[in-house]
Length: 451
Image (cartoon, rainbow, N blue to C red; front, side, top):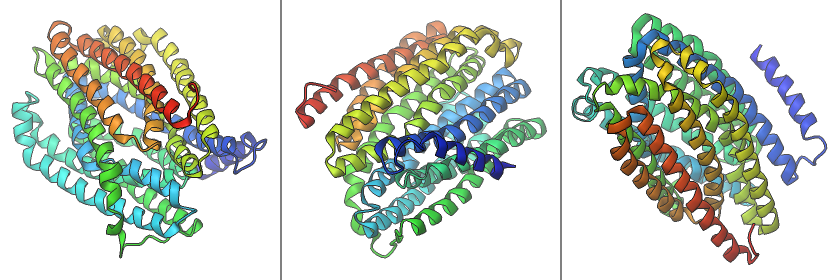
């Protein structure tokens, strides 16, 4: 059934891009966007459905713990991933045609580095789980659950590096296939796990789907390497290590500002009176923030690969056209998704259970913040494609400082609503500063009066 659906989408994609040459800029972007859309709709829909049922099964306090564990995974995931997915995307896209041997070495380098860093991060989480649960999360009873989440952390980091390689090949059909299959497995596994074993069962479901994704991604990468005649060179892969310092390190540092800041802001909420009850509301609303961001981010997934390819070819007019189109697409699409969510906010929160109904304003603020963040993310990809990755670190540092300052000020007063207000303030400033810097950079690089 799944393969027949994918074949139907394949025919639709070909029809959609049929008026453009397959190798044209528009054709490549449209093909990548269509396939990103396929996987996003199914997987995110299944994730949202699973989160609603899981929240009703676990209750507000336990669901708050579930959300705090996911935030902890995200924080450690930054150190596990080390920006290797973005590195693979940029350099595989840049060299897969002009220098296949080098692209193969970069694939080997990103894979080996991802395994090493994710293993270290998982071991650190395993060892520190009791201390984290007792001293930072105000929940000693979550120690075992945090240790279980080390498996999720390890597999998610490997999946991130694999997806980066596939994006570098512009293999968005394969990415969509993986997302589709994972999404279809997410709902039954999450619901059955929560019903049988509570919070630990829900976490076990995440481990299972992450492992499935790793297997499917590995098969897809092997297929793409054969198709593009890119040999994965393990023998001399360390000769490409310079890209780790030039690109991966600043990309990692940019993320190292974001995820730990989000985790710390959530920890501020968890340590308040009735903190995990408030965290339950925030977690439910945050599922929809993720939903708003997910589709625009996937539709713009071809962007870094294509912008890097265009920069390599020196085609700066195409760079500007592609960036402008993607900005409009990201803002328009995220707004289109956000408006009905805002309108239906009371009913959405009620679906999680009676105890979640007071979370309507939290959902509204988070969704508005996500429209801003989705637009800023497109600008960030353009900055990275021009090898100005250190500036993404600076922009993320500003975002993190604003988020933490606002959280310390607002969360003790307003609980979950204060945390949502903090996210809105941080993303608004991030979007503004990214736009200003991008305009300055593009004027200097292209010697034109703006976008």
